[in-house]
Length: 143
Ligand SMILES: [Zn+2]
Ligand SMILES: [Zn+2]
Image 1 (cartoon, rainbow, N blue to C red):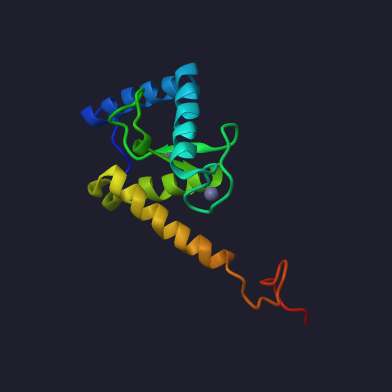
Image 2: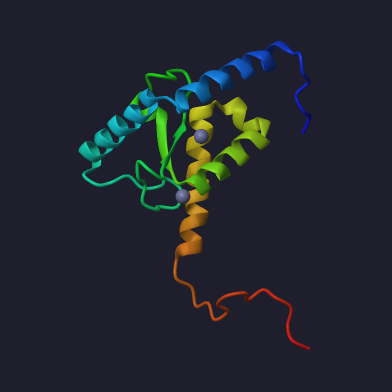
């Protein structure tokens, strides 16, 4: 992966967007937007939100909202946001930002595919297996 070269126009634009994003994320307005988003979710689905990847309960205090799109930063639509726990959110970003192919797809579509992929592997990891090796089962065998 090539590191971005400083001074390019796009990286300045990106820095400006990041600053704008950081300001919004720490604003009271974003907190209200999260509340409204959660209310909409509950109205639609009749249940509290859960992490789109691992299914962990999502709460206003501990949940993250991943942006499928930054186009409406500051006045996001319901569908612009995907609920994730903090851990899965980090994973989504790691994948999204590590591979240029995802960026070419567009952020919303890339997000959906990454979330779908991760949630499949997460569900597979959760499904009950006849797993005799509990705990640190992958350690070296005793001589
Ligand atoms: Zn999660
Ligand atoms: Zn995100």
